[in-house]
Length: 389
Ligand code: CTP
Image 1 (tube, rainbow, N blue to C red):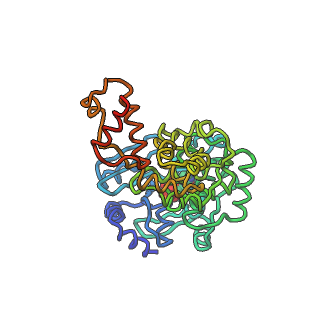
Image 2: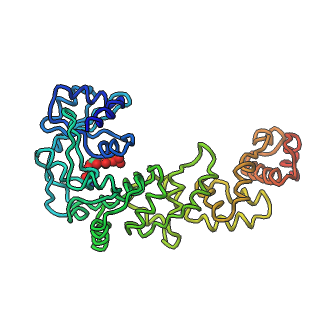
Image 3: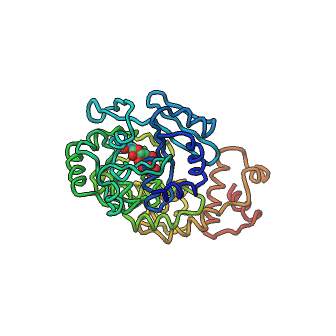
């Protein structure tokens, strides 16, 4: 398996890790990085487990170390590199779902506390030896996600969300026994025991996956979120219309996946620690089908502008996917950019009294401009706005 160390060394941050560990023993690359190297993928992050003290290795890697005493961990960030270091440890759960009690342990025991076999593989950076829990290497070959013990999901129900992401990203399936344990855990209410903020962060991770719709499909398939009903064609249609650099594609994906009959979006997302902007987008997007009907019924451009102006662009593109593609395309490409060549100062200069009527007049002139009744011409627009005064 020395091939693995060679592959690690081809990555700039991997090379630095190997150099920093040259003189120390008992340092292992673990978790997703070893899995990804074995699959021929580029690791997303480098998790390192040290049998002993983490601080000497942290110091050898760089200076910007954040250390967490309780778990004997350290994070070193230097330039584009980031290494997460942890002392080799075992975890005991006093009760399911509680934070684990941690004690130092050898690497083999450290591997046993992990979520699925394919993440429970360690590469000894000193001698290149690979250690893995039972089934790990076969599961990696066969494309299977298998928990290490029957209580795994009860100990940590967020693992259900994690395996949904791995299944989507790697195209893996749940091993039969694990699939049964997942069903049992969900039936026993494991998913409801996860706090809102943890669900929120799992949801964000799912949305950051290369294929977030696939991740949401797996989450829904496992029964973790009854309010999710991912719809790939609707999502893709909406994303295709999202103007470059505008809006949040991740929110389009999430909003497109929210089951329509799931009631009040605000209530649904309370506790997930969404930002005010995120809540506003989801609230607007929940009304995309109604927005689509109104946009389709708008008989004039000015009416369409009134319906769509101020609506978050994520909700607008969902309305397009809900049948209003022509009016939405017209709004996005053209109408929303239409403005007036004049402003309130022009009307004051022309003799209009200061007051709210200035805004009303400008708005009415803009509507006529949108409807093509007046041209992009200052004099004509001033005359139009002043008309009847
Ligand atoms: N882990 C676990 N149970 C959790 C969280 C993490 O067992 N609830 C273990 C797994 O062995 C995992 C490792 O900690 O591989 C690192 O966790 P994380 O960085 O979240 O996952 P990666 O597997 O590195 O995944 P990714 O490719 O998504 O970064």
